[in-house]
Image 1 (cartoon, rainbow, N blue to C red):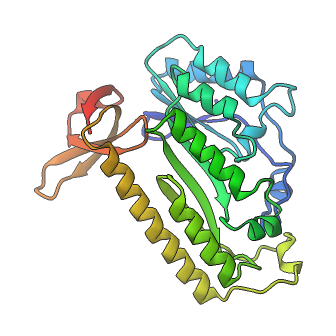
Image 2: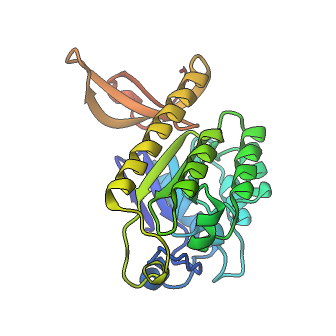
Length: 290
């Protein structure tokens, strides 16, 4: 099956592979080929099999999943609708990473009123500077990105928003960097996944005649964004303390400081919570107060 499982609670369902975008820092189109996907019917069947096999959470993965439908003449929102119509009430779906230009208001609104989709988005931004986005050949501006985030928060105030951020690409001047950090500070996002740029053969960026960011400075910038991320996550957790949520308990056994056993789980909006270890709770949903 296309489903790869981690400790049997969560199932990663690959719905798409390859990419037709040629960002200047990225080797994926060469390595993975053109964007392609199975049919909606196939994905639904795989999801139904996973649920029948006990999966309570399905994570839709791919290289550029918002581009779903290219090889079958279908589209991403119809895939989401079909998955939401699967009978069993006792499961949830997360969308992994979706390009901001493909994460339409229609998709966001659908997730907000769906039965099974978690209020959790992961959106690659890569830079908060429009100048750098242009150098990277990304297909949107930071204004579009901020609009997507605002729309998510408008219809799902409790949504968790993770963002991919790259630091230290060619052409990321000090001015672009300050602009980037200020933009990240301003966004109501929950976590940043920070990647430090390294030159890759077979990409366009090494041929670009642009100022190079020294390695030490790249590392310093990465630390600075990590600190922004930690503040954002702490703030997100604090905002939701005391709220009701549904947690899916996982199988991993964790040791508390006092030597007792604990277990962990995630709420629908991706807040990690803990409770005393109880084998009967594994792979079950529970209503809790955060």
